[in-house]
Image (cartoon, rainbow, N blue to C red; front, top):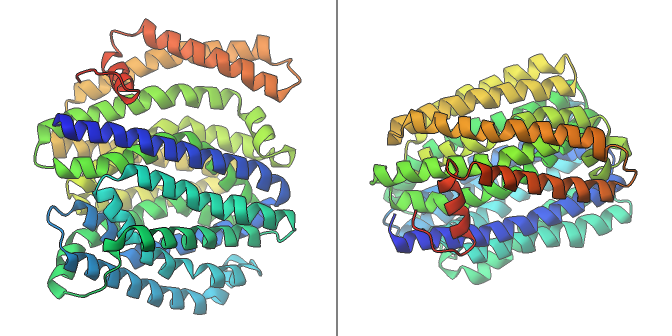
Length: 488
């Protein structure tokens, strides 16, 4: 990677990290407040509606956004054609969803689901209006703007709409209008800031060029979406709205640490990888570094979250969400695999291997559905375990695809996992016994998390430096992110 491109990546990492951190803080605060104002059943009904809407959103966009980012030569006709395609599909699919809402409501046996779906159908053309503008920002590596706009739209949706509506006892509608508020905000921003995106045209040749990549990308996204949301459909259908509320909020909590790392690297390194897609040597080195750094950061966090799951659920969601504890622990066990397969997914998309990626995502989706269905006989905890096993399978499948694409050393990847385990095992022992003998008797959750968190950070950093020789590259990348000049 050239020094200029490297600097852009690292600066982008910093801005997207700041934006993602800001959005995660807002999400965390919103969840703490809304979980005490809304019931698991209300979360479950809106959750099912969002699963359906977000699935159709993939189809309506048809991968034109990633195609805009990935293309080496992009003309105004490409931009106009992408806008036209996504908007027309968004309108058509929104109308289909609106008129099928009653049938969907009957299938899930949730009477208030119909009206929720009809209103949330507006998200489809709304998202289509902004997809090209956001993709142009990502293509141009304008990560600071992306970070600010994401935080602002979430603030409007939840701080300005959802929480006030929930306090006024509007129930599930507070969640519905939060989603619509985010869409409206991001559309206004894109319309007035990204002027190049305000162009509509249509060229059959440009459409073919965009869709040759976009359709394959969308096929993989459909499979990946089914894998990510199939468990929610199984829980909603067979265990009910209340169980889905418990499961989805446990899942949402699990995603906070992963999104800080995964969301950042996704937005920053996809355009970087796309721009150097011909240089497999540089990509191979960058990929292994990303994988190793993410594991180094997330595995210790997973250990801490697992042992303090009961206290975390009580603090964040409240006492009425106790059923989420075991679900949260099961999901945390597989958190590292879930994050790391995303990087392989990102790599395949950047290199244009969208159909090989789609095949593996189809296998993953099937594994999630089977695992969730078998698991539901054992309750929501069983679903979480089944999904975790499917995640592990997908991590292995995507590692194999990445190796086929860029030819990294299996020895390097195995060594990376082993050295992270060498840190994880003593850390897990210390966290377990510290909770058992030092923190268990603390009555105040505030002091529990303050003292245990400081102990966790101290021990983790101590172990990193104890293994400093083996962790040299990861520590150097961290130094660069925080502004030190180190040649990697």
